[in-house]
Image (tube, rainbow, N blue to C red):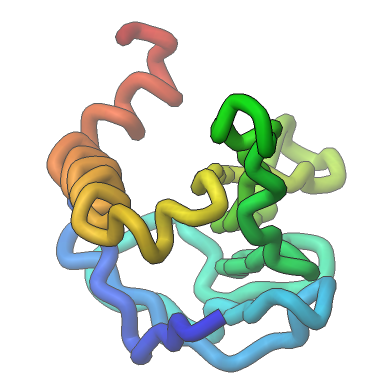
Length: 156
């Protein structure tokens, strides 16, 4: 995977967090087809937020690609149509230890983004693949605070 996060990462807007930043260290990903970073310190005003990842309260970012990338399959010799279009799935995961009840062991929150790209689109339609990703990440950044509000209030 070609992504490399530069540290610190500037966090997106969230209610109750002022200019959040996250200093990262390279961590060991669960698989060889991924990269992982752990938060080692935070910046800005983030009252109540754990300052670093730990075994019981992880704060990590993981990105992974398929362990074996798929290519386009066989075109039917009679119809000229692809028999099947395989998909390559890329995943982004943030894990964060959270308190569910005072005095209890923490639980791990998992926030996932999955990118399911039809094989062949990476070469035949690069502009539209990039446009889809641009919209996805732009929308997430634009409504980051609203997504957070929805997750803590249940109101969409």
